[in-house]
Amino acid sequence: MRRLVLHLAVCTAALFLGASAHAGALTGATLGFSLGGGDELVFTADGTVTGSAVSATEVTMAAGGAFAGTLTATLMDAAPATLLSVVIGTNTGGSWNGSPLTGTSVQINGSSIIKGFSGVELIVVPFAAGSVGTATHSGGGIDVTVFSEGWTSGTLAITGLGGATPTVTAMGGITPANVTLVAGARVVTSLADPTFNILTLSMDFESVPEPTMPLLFGAGAAVLGAFAWRKRQA
Image (cartoon, rainbow, N blue to C red; front, side):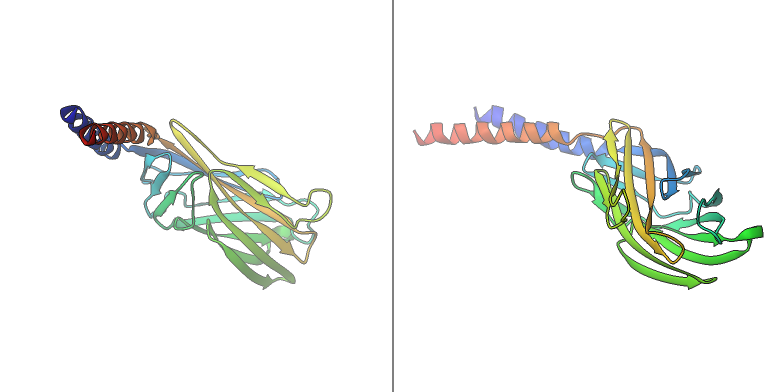
């Protein structure tokens, strides 16, 4: 019995080390930005994006500028604003942990530029996607206050929107080769009723290892160890 317990303990340690050694590398990612449920602007990461899925409860991304770029969408019923340009710059490095995955250490920095007729800039609203907090900006006769929420692979709920749909939700998720996180904000402007934005970070990995098996082996070893101890006591 003692040899069996020792064998299981060694196997458990090997499984833990194996899970760490075989963490799935990040192979690609996209960042989607949607304002008020409108068309999603999708930024595709270039080949410099790096990170790993250590397990379904620990995912990392390194700092960099893989999502850098500018995309523009048309704004409806928001005169004098007619266009929204979203500029993505650099991102900080960090991790998401837990079940569901959450975290604020990875922040994607950028700005939303609201433009009027003929493409004239009215106001620039900086943001750090994934952060939590409140920021107020003014320009071009427009006041904007943003109430930001952090990343989650679960359900994101944005409340306080008023009207027929006072709350909107967005879903993240985890599959064997993908982790999708969502973040967002309630946006209050002097132009119209409160609105919202949703950011969707979709990351593809070689694999997303499950931590369950090492834990099961560890639990099995503990049970057998307790049994052996009781047998000796008897």
